[in-house]
Amino acid sequence: MQDTVIVIGSNGQIGTELVNELRNIYGDGQVIACDIRRPDYDIKNAGPFEFVNVLEKDILKNIFQKYKPTQVYLLAALLSATGEQNPQLAWDLNMNGLLNVLELARGFKTPKVYWPSSIAVFGPNSPKDHTPQACVMDPNTVYGISKLAGERWCEYYVQKYGLDVRSIRYPGLISWKAAPGGGTTDYAIHIFHDALKKGSYQSFLSGDTELPMMYMDDAIRGTIELMDAPSEKITIRSSYNLTGMSFTPETLAEEIRRHIPDFKLGYTDYDQRQAIASSWPRSIDDGNARMDWAWKPEFDIAKMTVDMINNLKR
Ligand code: NAD
Image (cartoon, rainbow, N blue to C red):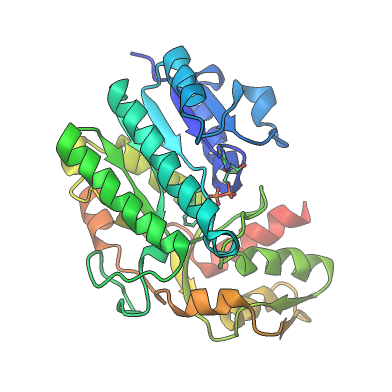
C-alpha cells in the first residue's frame, strides 16, 4: 500500500524540513502539509497544502476522511517561552490538539502517529546530568506540563486502543532553514545569524547555562528512523530521550570564533527564559533509543557550527 502522510504544523521550524524529507521518501503528492498559517517556504509549490486548525475537529476530520492517512505527524504546539506568555492557549493547543488527533487516528485506524515531546518534561528535581529516561519529572512550565500529560495520553492510546503512537523528547533543535518558534534554546540559532551579520550577539541565557541540543539533520533522521523501526523494537511508548550534544553559550561562542575570530558574546538583562533553562537537564541519557532502534547522532558542536555558518553565508 502506498503511504499517505499528513503533517500538521508543517510550516514551523521542524515541519519545513520534515515535509521536504518525507516528500523525498514518499513522493511530493503523498505528503500533505497542513498548518493554520500560509506557507512562506516552498512547501506549497512542491505538494498538497491544506489550511487546518488542529483545534477544529470537524475540519480535521474532513482531512482524515479525504486523505485516509497511513501516517500522521502532529507538530502544531505553542513552545516553552511563548507558552509562558499565554498559558491557557498553550494548554488548549498542546493538549486538545493532541487529543483531537489521537481520537481521529483511533477512529480512522491510522497505522502510525508521531507526536514530539521535549526535554521540558523534566523539572528542577530531575537529575541534571545524563538525565535518565525515567526519573522524577516535575516540569514547572505550562509547556512542560502539557508535554508530560501528552506523553501519558500517547501511552494510554497505545495500551488501551492499540494505536501505534511514537514520540521523541527533542532537545533544543538548531537549524538554518526556518526561524525557531519561540523556545528557550532559540539563542543557539540567533547567535549564528548575529555572528554573521553583526559580529556579536547578546545572549538571553547566561554564559554557563548548559543545555542538551541537536542539529536538525539528526532530528529529522532520528524521527524517520523511529517511525520506520519495527513496532516490536519500540519499548518506550511515552517518549524517547534523545540527544546530540550539550553546550553553553560560552562554548558555542568559542566554536564560532574558530570561524569568526572577532566574534563577541554579551548578555541581556535577566530574561524569564533563564528560569526555564535552569529547570532543565544539562545533558540527556538516550541509551534506550540507541539500544531499541540504533540511534546515533552524526553532528557534534564542531560539525554543526561549520554547517550552520556555511549555509547561512549562502
Ligand atoms: P514551530 O512553532 O516552529 O511550528 C509550529 C507550527 O504549528 C507553526 O507553523 C504554526 O503555524 C502551526 N500551528 C500553530 N497553531 C496551530 C493550529 N491551531 N493548527 C494547525 N497548526 C498550528 O514549532 P517547531 O519548533 O517546529 O516544533 C514542532 C513540535 O516539536 C512541537 O510540538 C514542539 O513542542 C516540538 N519541539 C520542538 C523543539 C525545537 O527546538 N524546535 C524542541 C522540542 C520539542
